[in-house]
Amino acid sequence: MSANPSKVTIKATALLLPLLLGIAALCSAVPDPRYREYLIKKERSQQTGGRVVLSEAELQFNVLLDKLKLQEMETSDFPPAMHFFKAKPLIDRSKLFSLLQKMPKGGALHVHDFALVDVSWLVKNVTYRPHCYVCFTDSSSVRFVFSLHQPKTSPQCSKWMLLETLRAKVDNTTDLDNSFIRNLTLYTYDPEVAYPSQDVVWKRFEEAFIAVWGLVTHAPVFKDYFYEGLKQFNADNVMYLELRALLPQTYELDGNINNRFWTMRAYQEVLKEFVGKHPDFFGSRVIFTAHRGINASELTDILKEAIKLQEEFPEIMAGFDLVGREDTGRPLWYFSKALSQPAEHGLSLPYFFHAGETDFQGTDVDQNMLDALLLNTSRIGHGFALVHHPTTKALSRQMGVAVEVCPISNQVLKLVSDLRNHPAAMLMSEGHPLVISSDDPALFGASGLSYDFYEAFVGIAGLKSDVGTLKELAVNSIRYSSLSPQQKEEALSIWQKKWERFVVENLPQ
Ligand SMILES: *[C@@H]1O[C@H](CO)[C@@H](O)[C@H](O)[C@H]1NC(C)=O
Ligand SMILES: *[C@@H]1O[C@H](CO)[C@@H](O)[C@H](O)[C@H]1NC(C)=O
Ligand SMILES: *[C@@H]1O[C@H](CO)[C@@H](O)[C@H](O)[C@H]1NC(C)=O
Ligand SMILES: *[C@@H]1O[C@H](CO)[C@@H](O)[C@H](O)[C@H]1NC(C)=O
Ligand SMILES: *[C@@H]1O[C@H](CO)[C@@H](O)[C@H](O)[C@H]1NC(C)=O
Ligand SMILES: [Zn+2]
Image 1 (cartoon, rainbow, N blue to C red):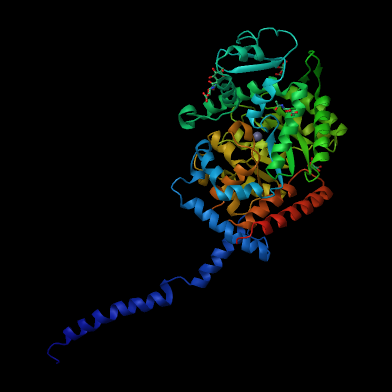
Image 2: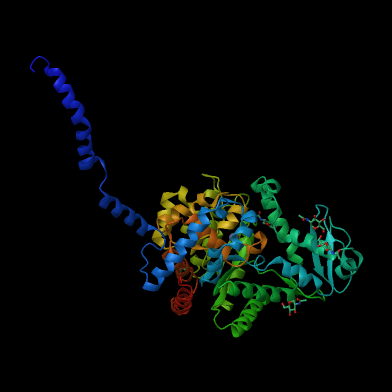
């Protein structure tokens, strides 16, 4: 035995080593599952809606929601990963989407005045009204105008043709109407090819806005358009709308021009009529907007008018904003002196600045978010670049300034392609104050708010977001609105009733 002790030792070691390793793994190398569970819960509680206390019914409803969301993720064509123009038919067929359509979503806080209504309504209804003329531009776009007489030819446009006459002449009016519809939206079969860069897509975007202009600034159309917009948002279960509005002059058939005060009164009257017929609709307020291409002295004049409007229409006017592409427009800091004037004179003009709708880091424009906060903005429109700026982000949170996230707009205008990579995913994972909105739904071939809610809930918020997330997003849209504290309470209690009914009506069988 003693002749060969080493053999025994080797044998013993060979047996012991895996055993020792196994014990070591059990004792210290495998992480403590309770600790893991604790960390997972902690992280979940940080996300948007993570601390919302759910009722028994909401927990049951969540089972359905979970199941439907999993179904969306199991298909090979995951809609949020695709361009919206291609994803839309898939979204339209999704059960989760039809649930989100029925869901009371609260308010839409970032929508522009002339991108509210499905453009087929403009073509099928408005261009069929009498006295509507069209001309075709050199860049193969269209312009419209209503006039009693043959209008004077515009530069770079064909002779004006009365649409009634033109339609009688063409073989197929459907083809003509479809070409108008294409001019008034950005929709195209192959967006990646049609819009290779931000410059190209923004050019088309602005072109579509100009094409729509002659139709929607005709005074009677202006009113009908807003009414139709309210109708479409209300039908999408949105109860409140904050409209970014240019408040343009409008024109009558006889050539008379109405000023901004007429435009504001028109909004007020149409809203009153709509709410009279739809008492569940809470209302609408207007954020007066000017194009950021103007210079400081022009802005000073516009701000004076804004203050007058704010004084004359306090219940419908919410405040002021600058619009247009940030990357090519003037940065907010350039306007800082003019924008500080109202506060210096003790006048109230709340700001709702578009800021950070850019993917260029470190430019003057990229600084807009911080400058918006320094200029006392009430919300940040887009804030796409916010996650690049930890100090600004912390300040926005501390000031309770919500970010208006518009997923489809950011995708179509080429800031992000797969919406799972939208920076709002980071904001949502840490419960940053934010709301979901739709920016220019009509131009993107969307409508109302549900498509953006779908993209935010399925694509941006991820699998762990739940009924609490949806609830917090809807509540945020009232909490961060421009309504007074008392109106917010009123709107919240109306929303709460709608919400409870929605949950009960959609419990899993
Ligand atoms: C007009 O064109 C559309 C689509 O291009 C087609 O579906 C329709 O049948 C045409 N109508 C007539 C009257 O030719
Ligand atoms: C706009 O309409 C014109 C005239 O019908 C048409 O030739 C042109 O192709 C349209 N533009 C787009 C982008 O579809
Ligand atoms: C067009 O819309 C107006 C209301 O906005 C409506 O009264 C009218 O009946 C519509 N006309 C057509 C042809 O759809
Ligand atoms: C601002 O723009 C207006 C209108 O284009 C122009 O008349 C004015 O000279 C400009 N002012 C400055 C300071 O550039
Ligand atoms: C900041 O904005 C809020 C809301 O519009 C307003 O009540 C407050 O007076 C403003 N503060 C300053 C310093 O302008
Ligand atoms: Zn916008």
